[in-house]
Length: 454
Ligand code: NDP
Image (cartoon, rainbow, N blue to C red; front, side):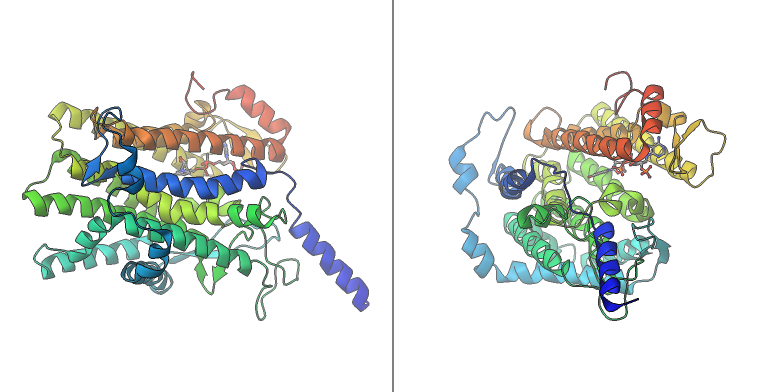
């Protein structure tokens, strides 16, 4: 083959491997820009409305715009960029320390789903080792400091500053991965098409800088053995959320010498959910975020800032407004969580078992893609019954603040919107992928999330 025809073949492979994105989500670039600017501001506002010296009660009766915009510890952006050195050092230590553990601690190796070039990426599954390490460090520090735990106090007292530092860090990280996406594969590495081109996300290759930076251009950015997307999805944000909740519990304990049951309950419920996510990380390998989405500002910000700093609002609120729940309220909240978890976990497990060929007796539709769509068991009740379970879990967390505050119910509302959007994206993907088989599936399973309602 001549040099020219070899070049042409290589260019064609690149084109097929990474087609230009023609369909835009979030109303394209203007939407991406609005979300990139709007959501960080929203997070700051939410955290300004729940802080020790000022917190919203009831239906926003004591809302005070001055408190929200200028109250508390809020500083200028320049201050967070230049003068918050201590917080930057702690956060970078947290992020890169976890990255070192992620690479260094032992775990089993698993293949992800097949990529567009026919190859598979391997992932190290060591959530158990990392969680155990964190628990041992916390227990050791508790004993060493006689329960004082200055690191938890620092986290509690500098909450907003840490939150803003994570937002800025997400911004820098997404710029770095965007730039990295243009660098060809290094050294001897080649993709399944025998070219040096990296695999880009189908949705993040529009050639509009802002849109691609937001959606994520590269599908699986990696630095050596570290998969940045899976790492961010499960480690620095999720575990920081756990620490923020613990810091709230610790704060009340140090201040009052007691612990209110609502705050203890939210710590237990969310702690269980976080460990469940970290310990069952294999499940993430087939999730849309890992298989389909690129890693850009949307995921970096979602994983590193939005999850820890909005999912903690109930615990933060309960550390400011100490609520003691009745036994029947505790029982009801726990039941909603158990029901949600049961639906969420058993439906996800059923789909996973079915996909692995463990449930051949269950009713299904054979698709042209050689896979089958399950329409039996949980998957006969709705197309995303797992989302319904997940949403019930979110509701149980909000209920820990009972009727004392409408703001803490933000989470359930936000999560419903996220799941609804996700369901529509998935439906679009499956319609294109499965065609007639998906139409047949929709006939057999007409409800999308909540059986008999939606
Ligand atoms: P699903 O687990 O519902 O997976 C959807 C994919 O599964 C489809 O694209 C299709 O993929 C396959 N599929 C769909 N229907 C069937 C069927 N009937 N039989 C067999 N395969 C089917 O969605 P997600 O990946 O979005 O979510 C996974 C979990 O993560 C959910 O429980 C969700 O609630 C949770 N989640 C939690 C979040 C949080 O912030 N806490 C955020 C997002 C999700 P294929 O192409 O392989 O056929």
